[in-house]
Length: 287
View 1: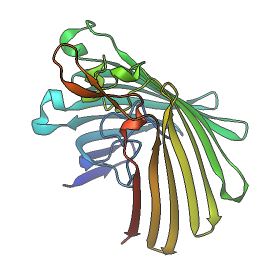
View 2: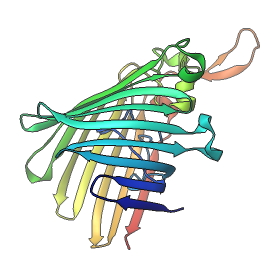
View 3: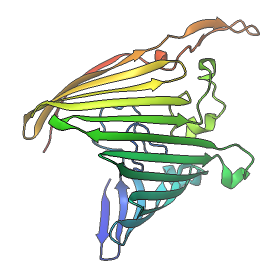
């Protein structure tokens, strides 16, 4: 597993195993479908690499043209992706447009980020069409978007709030395990089961060496939530420790018998009622 990068005045060309990520949203990135993080991922410092050829061309002082091909298993088209991304600066706003073919699906996306007063804001949206190259417009597409705002305050305090709309999700908890847009979960990197979410977050420096981070992913329909807290301590220049956990709130599933078959199965009553509680501790040494 290796990557080689050739840089010259006009462009950068990278060939090999590399991390490819898109989007400016803080919690859920609709345009990041190649190798995304799930919300409850413990280690987000290193992203899983993919085999790709990527060309990045700077345009002006703040613009960029970015395109590439990602090779899946055996370089099969149904396991691979190709993307073209254009970034510019317009009206005090960072504007990014992206078009992608991934696993035979098509994605069109936009990412906007700008300052509003003393705060930052972002809007990231993606519209995906399943099997467009094979079936045409025979199937309905899915819209996903994230909008949020953040701000830094005195004494190292940072806060943000983000709203996420998941067009692939179900409106009723009873339909969570059998969604109408199952293709988006199988091929489109979607993992949330509902439609509307709110994500508040807060981090602060308790001391120069001790930091606290609090966050919650709230399903506004159930309602249910997955709350997380992390306490990180810098033990030395290259050594850090962290403890934290994910705690769920929401009604658990209930047993229900199928009238036709008589089989008893679990029916969800909330999304995060299906999740376990999780506590963790990590020690990291950098070298």
